[in-house]
View (cartoon, rainbow, N blue to C red):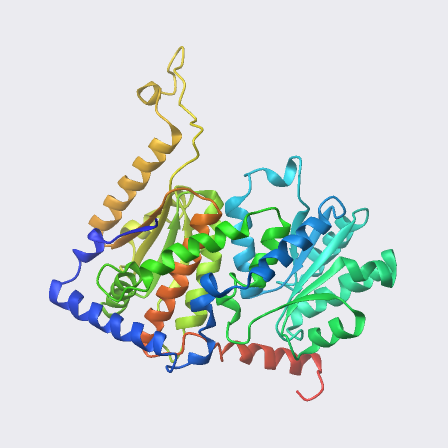
Length: 431
């Protein structure tokens, strides 16, 4: 089970102040579960681990089975919450060199998260001699980045494979009743999965938005949901043992004390994209009404050799939340050298995991002593079960934390400002 360690941040706040924040977090918890707070109609994600229909899981696996051996590549089209959850789950659970090794499942690539012409040209060139499928994810079907990618790739697919063959190569995840993508599916007969109307994009990884592409990539979506289900049982308890309540309380105390940046840290390259998912989750949920912590991500020990100096000795405007994980059963030990010219014989016989843990411990002690408070979250290992726990824990914590700030955790009104300007500049009718 996921564990939250807060001793080194609790020492930075007065006990009475912390207890008061815990009570405020519990009040925010009540607002969340009342489903009557701001955005309360978008809290369907709370129940997903226990309410997801079994036939949806089976249907996701059926698509995976159908495409296995027939598709070399599957392009997942989406932006924001429509691709970040999937991307971080695949990066976490895959072999580090899966993209260059032998594959059992289709190679998953992504499109529709930028408007880069070079990227699309490279993708079309890569797909030229490949048998490929498309999973297009968009509630409306009109968000410009994925809509453009889908149009270009669908036309390419029709030109190469014909209308009839294209029909079996495209699966959409979209609104059940309305929207441009819904109309396209209905008109051309593309298979589709629903996005629940009460679940927003950045909270949607445990719907078909994440489950379908993760299944197609060959990973265990039942384990993903099982991990989320297990942590949900713990988070339903409204008391001081609830790690989400403690985490929300402490990060809000840091904000009130003048900290403006929360730096999410990992010590495993496989968790790099988990930080990207966290950035969207917290930035879009809390960054409103000129409030909210700014989420940043760093990869340690790599970034200790680039921004480590600033963290240790720069402005005291941040705190760290580190995500730690146990290693695989296979150890990599430091061998003994015949000449010890590099001076590393004192490490001979120790595992890289052990050394990595000492690096983490030493870094945490240095940063705390330098005025950078530190929280850390530990999971047993990196796999579907534990990633499912992390997804649900952070979604839950983020919602409670946003309600403590007094903002709506589930909307993103400012995102529409850039879209309006873009549509006007492009000459879209009505803008």
